[in-house]
Image 1 (cartoon, rainbow, N blue to C red):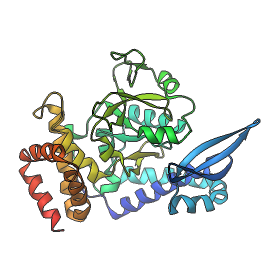
Image 2: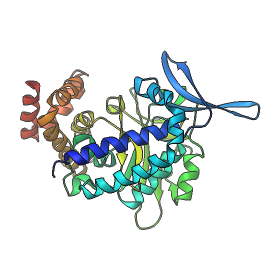
Image 3: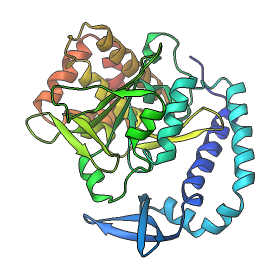
Image 4: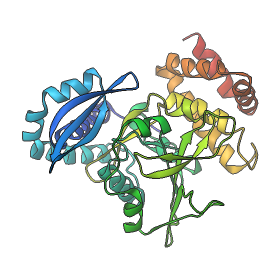
Length: 341
């Protein structure tokens, strides 16, 4: 691995900003706010015949309000922004930032176009790890830790219900166009995975946090799919961040915060069905170790706060993290050092 240059870091920040601008500039209709569940969200209201369609933009924030205020200017500058995005993407490739492969890029682009990430879908797993270079300011290690054939998307069930907006066209139609077939589970009506035909065999899975004793299958109406519910996932996808997938002139996606991703991997490594000595568990530990080592240098408080948060969530969390760190003595020492800042 190598640290990204100041030029690359600046270019990444500029490309991320331009992609966020596009999220507001490309909406149709006038912008309005709605309060749902005690929180305020921005929508674009478009009249279609006698009905009004509301397109979800994002939660209320200073950043969103600033873009809303500049909406007309952003729309007028669309052609210039597209040229600048292409230039920045070329610069990032030249500076050594890792582009994503064509198959994954095509899939993420198709999912972004129908609104998957706009509606709160969060890319998790190794593909999220691969997109943390810009946030961490360093290239990723080569090897198995960054390799995957799966794309995992998570969303909060409650958010999916409260938004009252949905991807269009449906993800099922999108997957069909990309030659993905549904993978049937024990319940024929509970499809939450799709596999691409051909040599790649890429798998797309949908997940959601479980707040019940039992994990199971839940509906995600905003994405128009079902999802497998998992414990501990709420910690991972709360307060996600935007990131750039370096494909064509950039794709705006949503990923977990790297510090939460790393600590969550300490939990996941201990609950793998094939055991903590499995290949996947080892990859979990490698990814966690890389992020913790990287962040311990320039963001020790962030990684310590994420670790302390997880450890405060109960004995099962502490037991799983503790057992994983027994296999990672160097990482355990780094975490202790982060406490002191």
